[in-house]
Length: 100
Image (cartoon, rainbow, N blue to C red; front, side, top):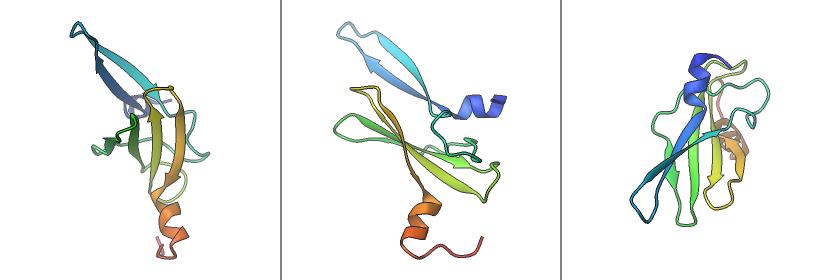
């Protein structure tokens, strides 16, 4: 893993305990990414739902294939990490992916 990937492929999950202490966890998605892709840039594409799931979109700008954005989920309650899909896959499934 190169320096750029090491910086980008982690998200920070912060939580506050009853005593006001802040804890930080590094969550890696590098082992979940599809073959031939890279986790290069995150443009603030992080959100959280009411169930405690954190969603992150990470750009695959320098991978082997065409540019894409990969979407992952992290469950803050169970610790489960999952690769969900990519923006190109969503677009292709709806029949509106044009030539690259």
